[in-house]
Image (cartoon, rainbow, N blue to C red; front, side):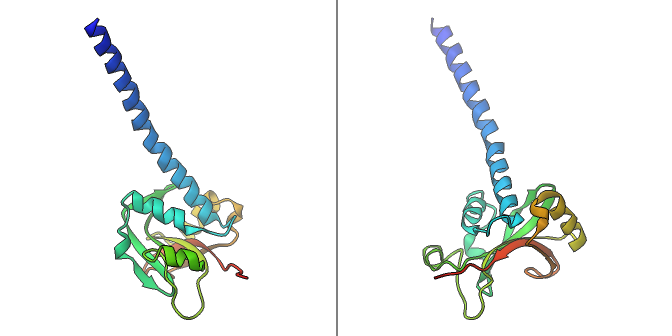
Length: 168
């Protein structure tokens, strides 16, 4: 009877281990799907959830962000593989005064024109390579998707979505 109980305990632990070990890829898949949707510009980007998820994964230290023109950029460590493209920086901004006040480590506002609601990832790949990747992976015929060389991080190509929201 004691051995049977140990067998059931061992089987239960094995099932738990399998469930836990298969849960991690699902979380990565969910994050990848979320990031691709954000970059697609189908909807205005809302970078907060993306930043929280990436920080929770330990991909960047929020205190090491580089602020520029009402946006903040972080180096991703390790780099993020998203649909077979490797990105090494994330940049984000918001125009929402509540988010700026509640999440000052992520968002800030400088004088001048705001970059809007923005989520950008940068890569060392060339702009034509990133454009082909966007066409293949972002849907929406990549309408509204911004691709530029050196726009956010010198020597890199960025891909992102930025929209200016209308506030009452």
